[in-house]
Amino acid sequence: MTQIIPISDPADPRVEGYREIRERDLVGRAGHFVAEGEVVLKTLLSGRSPHRLASLLIAEKRIAGLMPLLAQLPEAVPVYAAAQAVMDATVGFAIHRGILGLGVQAEPLALDAALAALPERATVAVLSAIANHDNLGGLYRNAAAFGVDLVVLDSDCCDPLYRKAIRVSVGAALTVPTVKGGAAAGILAALAAHGFEILGLSPRGETVLADYLRPARVAAAFGAEGPGLPEAVLARTRTVRIPMAAGFDSLNVATTAGIVLHHLSRDPRG
Image 1 (tube, one colour):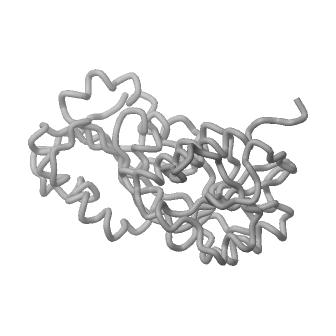
Image 2 (cartoon, helix red, strand yellow):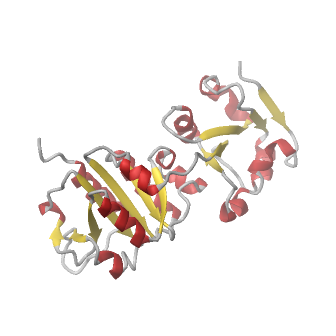
């Protein structure tokens, strides 16, 4: 039986991890993260995520409707319930969804070991300097939808376990295997050593995406909107472009990734 623990004071030390969320999200949480919403909670309880829940903070008005889901919680995970005003005062803003989970990050994966563990046929998404959390969340959503085996982030990317990135990804940021791989040059070298052909997306790409026939192992690299991938990165890839209407050559990076990853998900062997 799930035990619901009432919280009436925003300063209660039991909900310290939820206090002033926006400010803490900017500086990191020392191995923890905050996830928001029912869909994300279901993801954390599905067994598909390497991360685990430490606790929940839920608005009182949501408790009754969530009881079937809360019944799935391990006994060690406390569920704190607060009036909406108390919950808002704790987190520092109006939290309309009324569901927050404090998560514990899994041990980070090492790039070489993660690549070595991939199957013979594998797809990797490499993200370079993606600093917008909405875009990052959208990229993860596409990665999950089209069966990407691994996402590799360079050192200039923002945190995929930021609350907004998790929410926009519909929980995919919690389930898609991820490596923080450091500098882009080292990431590309590791991919090449493990037999991956590396695609670099650019409006000036040498190959039209529709004409590209993937090999068994392929990695697609996506850069930030505006500057795109650095020239030094493009020089070490097979550049690919998505044809567009005359006079326009710009797509949102998440849209670009969706088109590319859908193409790569198609099996030419039928």
